View 1 (cartoon, rainbow, N blue to C red):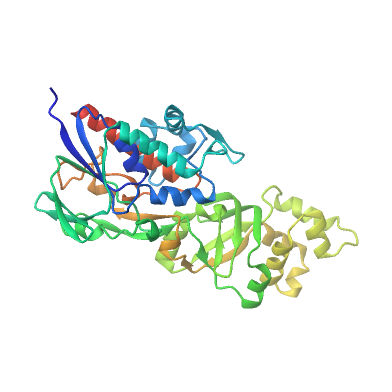
View 2: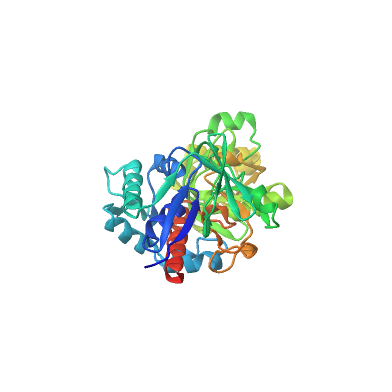
Length: 400
C-alpha cells in the first residue's frame, strides 16, 4: 500500500488548477488553500473580453514570446499549446482557432463553464479545497493561514505556492505575500506593470480630438522590439495589443530614464520610397488629399501628423513621409499596477532550481505568475501557467 504524501497548493489560479487536476491521487492527499470564496477569480476576469485560452502558433515561435525564454521553454515543451487543447478536449471543452490565431472555447461555452468543468476534474481527483484561507507565512516548518479571522497551522509534506502576481487586486492577486519570503532571505524583484497602458503627456487640445480613436494596422517599435497591431489613444496615453508586446523594452527605458521612446509606422505595408512617390505623382491634390486618398491614412493619423509638424514641415512631402514611417511618442509612466493585465517581478528566478523548487527551502515549490517572467497577452500568460502546473504534477508523480 502506498504511503500517501500530503501536498498543499497555496492559491487557486490557472497553474494551481492544472497541478491539482494532474497529480496522482493514489500517491498524494491533495489540498488547495484559496484566500477567496471561490477558485479561479482572475481566470474568470480574464475571460470577460473574450476567453483567450492559448495561441495556435507553432511551439518554436511560441517560445520566442517569453522573457526569459530559457526559463519558460522546458515547461512549454513538456506541455505545449497543442497538448493543452487536447487536454481541454479530453475533459469536454472543445476549442477553435480565431482569425487572430488565438484559441478560444467553441462559441456558446462561457468562462464559468470552463472553470466548472475543471472543478469537476478536481472533484474526481479527490482534491480537498479550503476557501477563505489566506497564507500568512510559516510557524517553524508549518504553514500559517488566516481563516475568517482565526489562525490555522497546517502541516504538509510538500508545498507548492501559486500565489499570482500583483495586478487585479479585486481577484485577490495583490502580491502581498512577498514579505514572508523576504523574511527568510529569498530575493523578491519589484513588481512592475506589464501588458498595460502607458502615459503620454498629451497637449490638451490634441487629446480632445484623438481620445478614444484607434490606430489600426500599424507597426509599433521601441528599442529592438517591433509589433504589428493596433492601439487606442486615450486621455491617459496609449494602450492595446500593438504595444503590449513591447512591454519589456518600454519598462526598461522607463525604469532607467523615466521615459520611453515609442515609434509608430502608420503604413507598414508601404516603403518610404512608395509613400514619397505618391506625393510626387499627386498632380493638383493637396497634402491632405494625398494623405487621405493615396496613402489612406485615418483622420486621427493626419491629426497626429499635423500636431507633430510645423505648418511649413506639414507641406514638405519628404518630412511628412518620414513621420508616417516613424512617428515618435514619449511615454512617461506606466498605468497603475492594479490596472495592468499582468505583472513582471516576484520571486527571482535564481531562487528556484530547474524543477521549480526553492533552493533555500526543501519540498517547497513555486509556479505561475509569482515568479519573475514575462509574456504578452494572446494566450501566452495562461498557457505558461498551465504548462508549469502540468510540469510540476508530472515531476512530482514520477518522483514519488
